[in-house]
Length: 182
Image 1: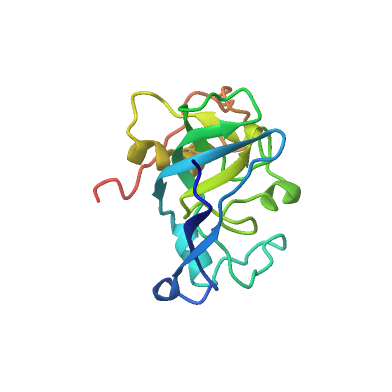
Image 2: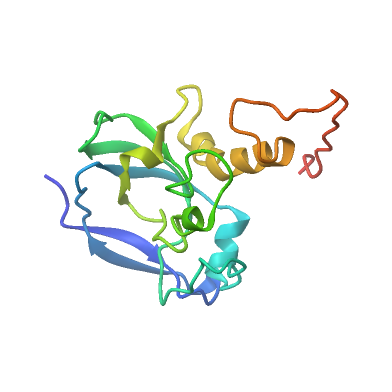
């Protein structure tokens, strides 16, 4: 039997030290949505900026009174109104409507953890199109760190190129990886 309430962390964007643990109703997925049990959440620099009220550099990022923070997860499908089967491990796409090409303001408005409620919760419903199956060889912890970090790395190397197509050039492109030593 499904619980009636879940626990989730919320922020008034007034500091990490002011995060509050609250209860909320157990989510019910709508048509085309997937209910996911959150197994692991990663913390991105962006998430700390949201909690501190410093993430307002885009006009689509209106400050909410309170919001569930964080954007990257690995979770398990509980129930679905889509092709995902219960028990499937999934990761969420950070900007829920940004599936290909250059990001636009309308895609920024679909960002998890601001402006949309985030993933620092026990359960959450997602549009089926905003989930991908987690790679089997990655642990929950590893998979939860993949979405924003992987897209950031891809964009740094292949700015504006579609996924799967490498940047054009003379073959003499260099990449400097800084901060890899810890």
